Image (cartoon, rainbow, N blue to C red; front, top):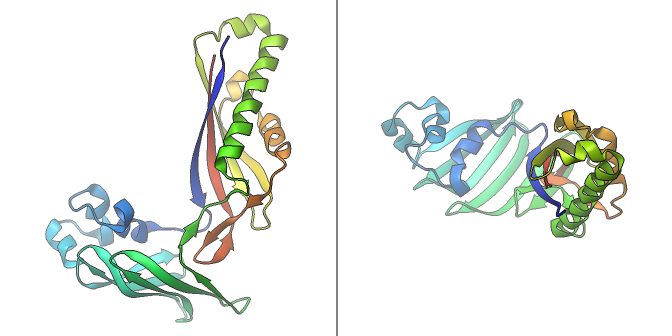
Length: 229
């Protein structure tokens, strides 16, 4: 019997509310005029209002206590963009050309540190790359299905020609450690947090934490595996 585990990931940087910025950056930093995402930008209700923002300086919230300011030219970020805490202390300065980030500086006002970057977001990832982890995870979940087949043969017969989806939340911490959060799907079939934790603990390669504007951040990913029996 052929079994195959298909792996899917969705990533999120914790404690960062992209809100308006995401809508401005929609479709690879270029507005898709007329889409719902853009129509909601800055509570705009018409293309006329949206077109106003194409070449004007705008203000938008990034996080709860941070405001950003910058200019769009033909729907793309251009020139200097700045972010300020509500007490007017600087959070970041970035320079764009035709929507592409050229360089940026961010500031940790608590630690008194400055960070330099050329990529706004770097998602958490295995040191040896995702291909290495996906291959490992596929083999792991195939072994899990083999165990179920041997331990519960009668129940396993009911799975033939079926697919089972299992979803977990993986937490990536600033120090490079990982853990399992909630189980989103698969518990009715007997998959639990213990099996998912073992998958991570048995993986020996190092994890690289997420980085946002040059600063290491906690993040999470929704991990989904579809096992085909």
